[in-house]
Image (cartoon, rainbow, N blue to C red):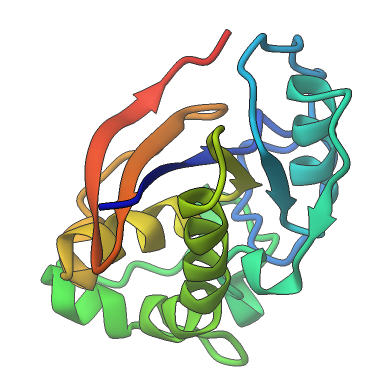
Length: 185
């Protein structure tokens, strides 16, 4: 049976960590140091923060930019300070996965957009001698976890660290989670 590894990495800390930055395109506060991890390919969200993180971690790799890897679109709440976000009350994980701000998308919507890209990257990992890295956002990491667990709402229970790497073992027919929030440096 063929096996591969997909490593999904959240971007580094931004210059505005106090705001909800879905499609709000902000830069990194600090460039990460390069890592010695050998990868076979590098897929990246178009967001500045993701491209800067990928360039810092893997300076010698060409980035494949994929718009499907953007963070969740939080609509009218995008760019708002966390302190100013409306109180949505206590929601179950399924209710949270369905929640959509005006003009935005739900977690389920984002998963439907991002999952094909992650599956393509995983298929590439199956044919590679080295892991395939994806540098994107906390929401995209949760989509990868949801794919492995086959349960989207459950993935919302994970806190995803800046520059945290989630490792998935890929095999024909599925995924297994091998690490969450691992430090690569």
